[in-house]
Image (tube, rainbow, N blue to C red):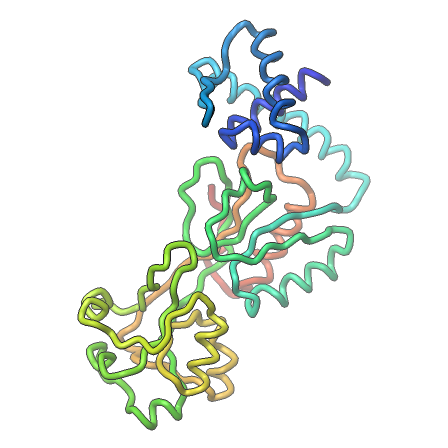
Length: 303
């Protein structure tokens, strides 16, 4: 068992590139992680990490050993899951990072909680880009694609950005016929919380419009605030279709420049590729795939 603990500490440290982060994920001190890896190195007779005061990096021997360890730990975890899943329902704490799109996710999450009451959902809603492995999440749901080779992913569906405004605003200011007409309108802009950059509107000549000095009466990092301002007749906003759907159906918002807008972006759920999937995570992913975008034709597994 001590050998397995050493392998686990080594893999976690390699994934997080930090003894401190590895210890946090394993529930032990950074010192304990370092000592476990030192014993492993002594037993193997090779150095697995280059160490400095600020970082660690795998040696060539460590890189080779890492892949072997992943397979060993994967087989152990698979054996445990095979035995446990045959006699118990999915259960336990599931820590997931979610984007700030409660109007899309909340009904599905509540339905999951009713369907799987033994799974404890620990949800963190944020639009910042989290490090899934370093911060100890079981999974993250995000818009866009991931380029992190350490992660597995599954496509949940896609959404579309739409330009919308209240009928009262358009009656007072006139509906723009061309993208260039936006220079005479109040524009409500979304600002990414991590970078402060303005989200591009789904227009082919957006960069030129922005460079020319598009009049912005609001910029914020809250979709809910943009929606409220748009419904209040304060300007034109670019909103995800799921966020504006209820207001459009009720007639509180209507499309602006629909012939000039084109946009599609995917939602994915991502999880660490170095681990076998637990029963609680498997049912969670399957539930999101089946219920988040039930009519989407492109919900295919990907890696």
